[in-house]
Length: 224
Image (cartoon, rainbow, N blue to C red; front, side):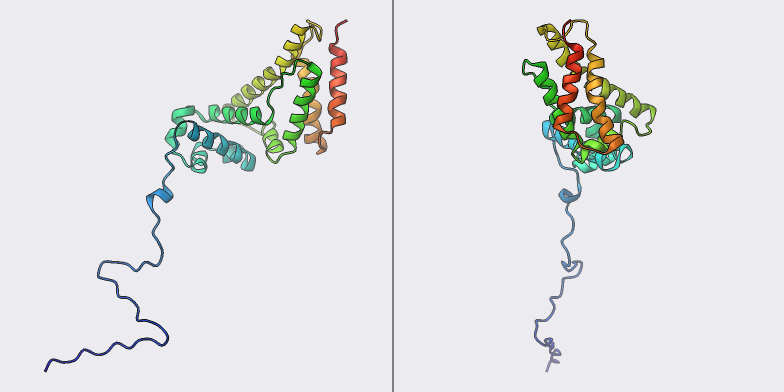
């Protein structure tokens, strides 16, 4: 008679463990799939939006050192080559990301009244400085920088000031201010106190301060 196989004892209160066929591993944990680790296949506007948002977020959290192209690509879920293909250099990426963010946070008003436009612009700037990103990004303007990042920073601020000057040029064309008024000096006189209040005093921008600055500058720009 053939020998009987020894009986398998079932452990108390449970089933026998399942034996895996040779060459297979027990499914202790689901393996990571390529889709879980590989960059997302974002394209076009969706890819650009993800990269710009990731750039600003990294700048605000860790400064210039944190916003390398590799770090931005990883945070945005895109390939690093996609970033270089669309922006070419890190400097161009940083400049566009900051310009895009501030354009959304501080859209340029055009109400037909210089007083109203300036009041809205300064109010938006004050609100921007009260966000977590505002002071962090502002500190980038005074932080040590390489030649590359300094060039991008200078170009960014030149563009921001030029956009604000449009308000003054429109007002001059409407006859609200003197035609020989210096738009750059007026913009600097309006914005500098807000930056000083945050950087030096750590105080918020109040509606009273905005009104006082607008009144002061418009008084100096009025036709004579």
